[in-house]
Image 1 (cartoon, rainbow, N blue to C red):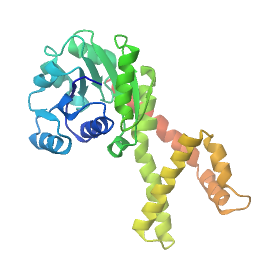
Image 2: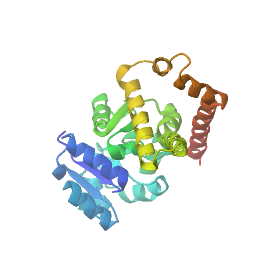
Image 3: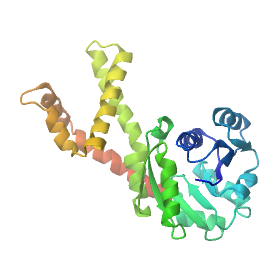
Image 4: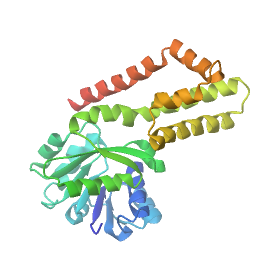
Amino acid sequence: MNKIIGFIGCGNMGQAMMGGIIKAGLAAPDNIIVGDLDERSLKKASENYGVKITTDNNEVAKNSDILILSIKPNIYPIVIKGIKDHVRENVLIVTIAAGRDIKGTEEMFGRKLKIVRVMPNTPALVGEGMAAICPNDKVTKEEAKEVLHIFESFGKGEIVNEKLMDVVTSVSGSSPAFVYMFIEAMADASVLDGMPRDQAYKFAAQAVLGSAKMVLETGKHPGVLKDMVCSPGGTTIEGVAALEEKGFRDAVISAIRKATQKSIELSKL
């Protein structure tokens, strides 16, 4: 990809993206320019990845072929107001802010530009992110694939319809918190039964990681994989029965749907 990739915002997600892009060879460090008011974050990005840095967002806006707005949703209006007259007509703008839909972003820029709305998640920080990619009607299929490749450099990605973004927010964006709670609960039970806590976290976390990998790599239905572990009259089916008795599935479904509804409410503010 022989294009200049610009970042406005140099936080954890932005730096995770830079690292993935460079590691995958999608862009050389010299072709990445990063703007932020936090000079410490800029220095860290420069030291870690060798990218160009600046405290002037307009410098990033003017020179980028792909412009990634890696900033908090609440400061989108302020940042866009400052750069909107400096972005080129054919720039590809990537947004990663929850609750900021494509139409709203277009209105902030005051003109129709190529915009790709993306919802990544925090496992991107360890190279295992999941991102939903949604381009507007000005973005070509090839350009959408370019953005997809960027996010696949530190995890996986899927192109989705924008109407699914609130569901993506819950099932992908919010759900890591639910998984951490599950890991913590399994570790607490193991500690209760005598296992050292550090060891308990390792066993529980690796079990979740391996199980997720089984779903992705075998292509088998999660129910089939569950049945493979459940021997008749064994320990696993005993635990499954306890989870069902406590309403495990209902609780998870409720959590995901509550998060989706909250995302819908926030997008209307």
